[in-house]
Amino acid sequence: MKRGKRGTSLWNSFTYWFGRRSLQSRLIASYIFIILGPSLLVSFYSYKAINNTYVREAESKNNSLMEMEQLHINTQIESMVRAVQVAYDDLDVQDYLSYTSEPEVEELVNFSNNSFKSLTRIQYYNPNVEHLRLFSSGNVHEIWPIFFRESRVADEPWYRKAEQLKGMESWSFLYNDPDIMERYANQVPAQTPKVSLLREMSKPADHHIGMVQVDMLLEKFSPRTYSSTPDSQSQMMLIDSEEQIFTREQASFLKANPEMGKVIKERLREYKATGSWNIHYSENGKSFLLMHRPLERINADLLNIVSMDGVLQEISHTRNMLIGANIGFIILVTVIAYFLNAFILKNLRLLTEAMKKVRRGEAYSGPVIRGGGEVGELAHHFSKLMNTINTLVAQAVHKQALTKEAELRTLHNQIDAHFLYNTLENIKMLAEVEDQRQISDALTSLGGMMRYNFKWAGDYVKLRDEIRHIENYIDVMNIRFEHPITLLQSIASSHMELEVLKMSLQPIVENSVKHGWAGDSEETENRVISIEIAEQSGFIVIAISDNGGGMSPERLRALHESINEEEQASGSSAGPGGRRAGGIGLRNVHQRLKLFYGEEYGLEIQSEAGEGTTVFMTLPKVLLTGDKQP
Image 1 (cartoon, rainbow, N blue to C red):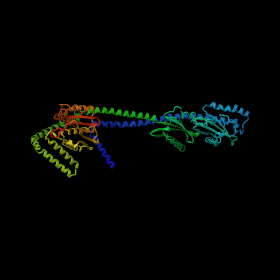
Image 2 (image 1 turned 45 degrees about the vertical axis):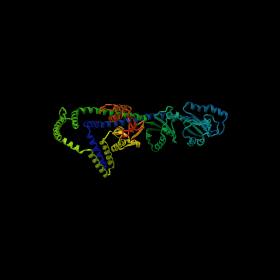
Image 3 (image 1 turned 90 degrees about the vertical axis):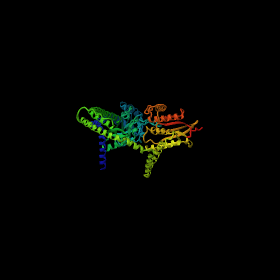
Image 4 (image 1 turned 60 degrees about the vertical axis):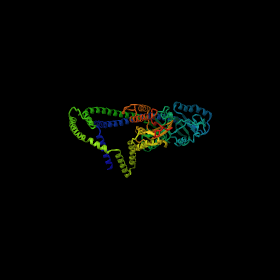
């Protein structure tokens, strides 16, 4: 129920606000709403279709690349299988591996000239094959780099795994291709990832005699996996049965996205368990496509990671074009609707302007409305109504004019200074009874100001009286502000008896209050006005400072020109960007000081934008008796 009432309240507020707009604005808003709905709907479905098209194109393109890579891998697999099969079926090789003792020299020479050369040609005709090696379980003579004793690699996990398969193909992936001849035993081998095919050899069937091994570097086995010119938008990788990931090191997505490797392994396990593969993946605000192809013969998987940054940029560009087209279309419709409505509603606008003039108190002359229709009829009735109102107003003015002078005299006799003081005292007492201390204090300050203004017995007053008047003024002004102004005084008690012109300091303080923070927010805190007095060579310098916004050099120059003019119209400006009221008030004080004390006295203003303003007043050091002090 509360939500329903709140929704109704919001709707009522909106309808009220919308109803207060001009007829032309409401018509334009209606046109935009009518056009915007279908336009947004069409743009949404267009954007969705384009988005799907870009994604499908990215999938199709990278699927094609993976098919080509898979065909290349299958070709390399067949090449390695044929190389193993040739060595596996060679009877002389089998006999050589089955020797338990060193062969005769003649047998060794014949074997080297025939079978060994035949095996060498296998690698010659298959340049992608890195190594062809045969390992003997016996104590045969090693013929490098093909025939070795099994003891060199018997403890390797990949060798034991192949031995357990008893003649079946065993595929292993290794990160390094160590030198089996151990020529560089003390050096760390460089990263040379490879794939190996091994088959255990038995003669007879249950008697192990050795192993045949064919190696191929992964950069030849799968060129796109270890491409020398990496693509910044995609990266292929091979994953073996032990979940080892083989891919390039440069510009690798796995380094930039540490969690990606873990996710890939989890998805491979899920694929092997359920047969399903989720192609989409996101991390750190980036989107990827994970394309997968199983390599069942070697018990491995081919994976292609495709960054969608480029695709998303194209989609974003298309989206921006659609948004721009919609905005341009709406602007065009708005402009057309505006001029059409302006033409149609011209007579209504004339009638509205005439009503506004009447409301401002201007004389009604009657709008010139051409044409008929509802607007013409409304203008006719409005003219008749205004003629009737003017007649009634003239009669009322004539009646009131007869008693005006008597009323003014009565008010003049009733409202005098004594009556105002008593009235303020009564209001102050009422505020104290109601415990409104702020109002009571403000009335006290206001009363003090009024007494000070009404009591004009002479042109000179003590400085303490002028300071007290400024304190009352600040107290009254602080009622207006959420964050009050702080008045700081640095005045010695001996200076309080100095003679100053009455109402000479208050206009300067008022100028700071009105203009010092004129450009700031209403919530500006720490507003400070300070008054300091210093003696310099027989005269007094009073400095009145504020921490407001200050003035630019141009405004300060214009203000100096204003206060130093002998004659200036009361409504003139203080210059470009100057303060009208501030310039007039300061000019009056400056001219009074010169008139009463001499040309060497007056005001000087210093200000800097953002640093506040300081007004220096120079006076002779005189007590109120008129005697100058040394």
